[in-house]
Length: 303
Image (cartoon, rainbow, N blue to C red; front, side):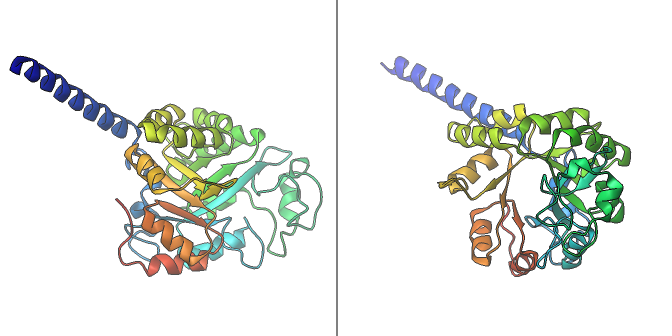
């Protein structure tokens, strides 16, 4: 009887040790290495050690710059975010008719410019000459990268025709550590990563987000993330009435070495609540509110 008990306890301890080793291996394989993906280390960003958003803090991302009176994704909006102390800005890119990567969100120009029709039907020179709600023309991504050489950019790649020119631009400027590749399309995102010459941070698209959400409770989020080549999940707090960001979700992502960035959070009470939950980044249109929120928190909520 005692012999059987010893065998049973031995097998149980071996199984427990194997599970612990397996979980640790998953965490190590998925964890964003600051040396490999310095973009994700807020303490090493442009201006680290100064400003309201410096030091050991969550990533604070100004959504399309800071444009309370219009002009999203323009040089003026990005300049406003930089003046507020932001070292991270979220932008969107598309390709012009002549293959230049332009900073613009919509497929059509109608909503925020004095022009009409699809962006892709106009050249970079033509797009630079339109008025984005009175805040100048549509900038090129190259102009943004050169204007603020230390600014880190979360870039949502909107179209397939922007994939190759985007990758070529990042390779030419050696800007890999300054950008995070994002897209709702995981296929498009992975196409970009294959063309980039150095490791570049990336956040999941819709399918991988869903896969991690399902796999998290099973302890398999690390496998999903590693196979997808992502280091962060950028998600809304709720999606179609389903709560995405929960304590369990954040814990599962952290166990897999994934950062969690939540968009688009504009109310102070929501910012505080999510930061208390332990999320790693917030994307906000209300850059002034987010800057004030982080400046007022004496202990940044990082693990």
